[in-house]
Image (cartoon, rainbow, N blue to C red):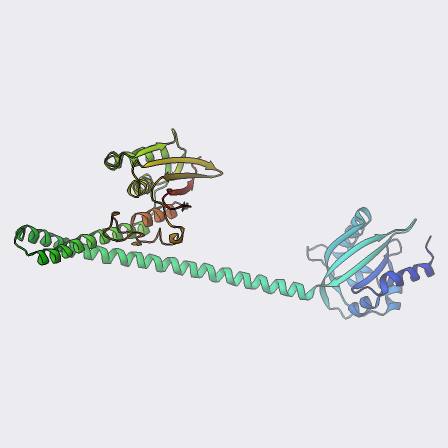
Length: 381
């Protein structure tokens, strides 16, 4: 059995020089039998007051952070410490002058044959709580601003899409007139122009044709922004069949081999948009092909999504163009070369996938060894 003198000597060695406030609590007597200078400094009571009259309730707030009275919480915390030997918890403590502060308690039951002693370490965490509060305030303000800016950006994008649609739509009619008169001139001047004049006229004709394609592409792209897709339970089997059949002429001309799964899962989406999506991706695979093109279309269910891959053995895509591939009117090949197009198809694909809350990306590790496009769409139950 530890005598009072022995307890004081033992307490001095373990408690006195501790860097935090430490109190030795005698459970049965409901009193403190030892405190260190840090505890005296923190709470404002002198040593005699602690050892004679101060109880745990006197240095605790009436209610704790969980809304439970300190008297009830003390019984629970003490019981838990006796059962588990060590307990750590947050506490709202109170100084002699009535000031309350958040504290972190660490309670350790001390070995004794017949009586129960608990070593209570008290750490004032006011600065930490204040910092956490400021961080939470900053986080809330940041999230609010992020939501506001995202909403503003969405509104701005909608306005830009509407503007692009109106401009393209208004330009369509004069463009149609220009193309019609160019065709009339082409017929009337056939065989009457000198070589240099014919070259200049060809520039005009090609420019008119390209402008018409760009206007149509802009209109189609802008229409996506104004549409609310009609989501339905769509069989991908049907989508793939339609997309491949729509490309039958190109497939026959290039002698392309299309290999696809025997069956595909069902997804949530718009049938019309999904046909356009996969038709564009398969058409791209055919266009940028090598002799004897081979295209594999596979699907895999992963959680609540379906991942579709379209792999070809074509010319591949340099990874440095990753950010440009899905940008409207961005071409990766020289204009007027072997590969025709205005950089519209893949931007449409990206927009369609975004409208379906999905993902699209590609992998093309080595030049001239093909490209695999991946599309993730929501799985239909």
